[in-house]
Image 1 (cartoon, rainbow, N blue to C red):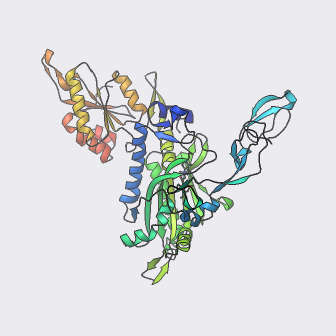
Image 2: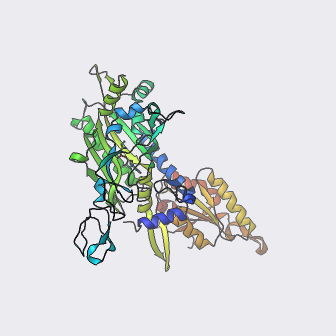
Image 3: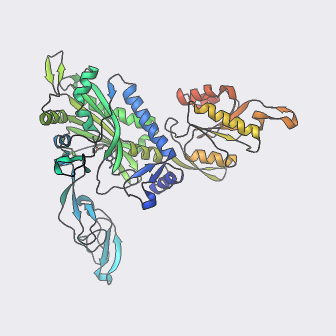
Amino acid sequence: MSAASMDVIVSLCKRRGFVFQSSEIYGGTGSCWDYGPLGVELRNNIKRIWWRDFVQQRDDMVGLDASILMHPTVWKASGHVDNFTDPMVDCRECKRRFRADQAGTMDWTHYCPATKGNKFTIKGGERCPHCGASRTLCPECGKGELTAPRQFNLMFKTFMGPVEEDAAVTYLRPETAQGIFVNFDNVLQATRRKLPFGIAQIGKAFRNEITPGNFIFRSREFEQMEIEYFVNPHDQLDGRPADEAWHDRWIAECQSWFTRYGLDPANLKLHEHLGDELAHYSKRTVDLLYRFPMGWNELMGIANRTDFDLKQHAKFSGKSLTYFDEERKEHLVPFVIEPSAGVDRALLAFLLDAYREEEVRGEKRVVLRLHPELAPIKIAVLPLLKKRAEIVATGHDLRHRLARRWLTLYDDTAAIGRLYRRQDEVGTPYCVTVDVKTVGDPDKGEAGDGKITIRERDTMQQIRVPMADLETVFGRLLDAGTSWSEVAAGYPRAEG
Ligand code: GAP
């Protein structure tokens, strides 16, 4: 298991430029986050490999990029206008707002009459140990009464065009999925796909969450990676209705995707939605949970949305959203399996899982054991002596050369030990050092050997490699996925 608490990750993210609070100089907006120089690379890597693995490398998938603002009837048809609500209560005193189901489980403030009105913070669901009271008032201020629960719609409302009137109301999309459903027929006509096939989309979604929190886990603006996989419900697969079999296949695919890129399987488990938990559109939903520091929580969901959405959009738009089954000579509405993941939650899970604190020669080493495909910086070029102009020039040349294929950084702002630690902390898998032996020493009449040292992050092993081999070596390590031990076996070890 990772050694990381949320505080440790939040602090690392700010210090090293992964994630900043939005509008921080104005006091911040508690529920929005900005991705810094390393965060944007990590985020892009997650999206890139997801798109590559689930869209480009499969022959049953295509992509889409729909607009965020859609016709308002989309949200009526999808059920979001009527059902995308949370019951909430307001404090009559401090005016804070809580989700009705969470007010009872939050830690609560209590002015205890048995101790002359002293203020205590009591654990959620527990009674005051002095007077025995349980919470009835506002959990935050401890003074105000709470209103009866009212339904609160989580969609952000806005106006299309210059006039702020009811007829111009529209919404920021709360999920990317609907952009796919309303384009089902367009994609079908344009691509002539046969069932089963999927449409994928990555994009921003917005929810006016009542209780955002836990860093980037729940925010009001976030990004989703969604697939709507259309299946013929009359087909049989693995001896079962095709939609049920595909649902299980997608659950397994998603789980193995996260473990392939580094999540410890022990930190993942499945959660089956039962009874009330099941969304209005779903025949079956399974969440993939990750063991976050605040407990097991949803990393992504995989739902069987049946034909609900296509039928709803057909009904509200008056357009046919069917598929013609050539074999059976019938028009049908496909069923949909929907794997839906959050980019921000995936990023948080990858960071938490990769974080390690180790002791190396009596000193603490913080290392992010990120999968090389995820690592923001792939290679760091570090000169051993920055006073030697040839070493610095060779370092810059190497960075320039390697940066054509992999994100490569040059850093000479500290001693080598410190530079290694900095790269370990942000997950850079390989460091290249240029030293006196590489370039030689004309004063002593020594010629350079033209070799550099490559250091691997996790083992901290070092090998000595001719500069001419660099593209081949990193091509094997970073593109072909050859293991470090296999590549390192072909070169002499350098001393650490
Ligand atoms: N189209 C289905 C759908 O939107 P969801 O379970 O509401 O289902 C899917 O959302 C995923 O989107 C979640 O598993 C989570 O990873 C991410 N997500 C949802 N709300 C989020 C929020 N407020 N902040 C960050 N990520 C969120």
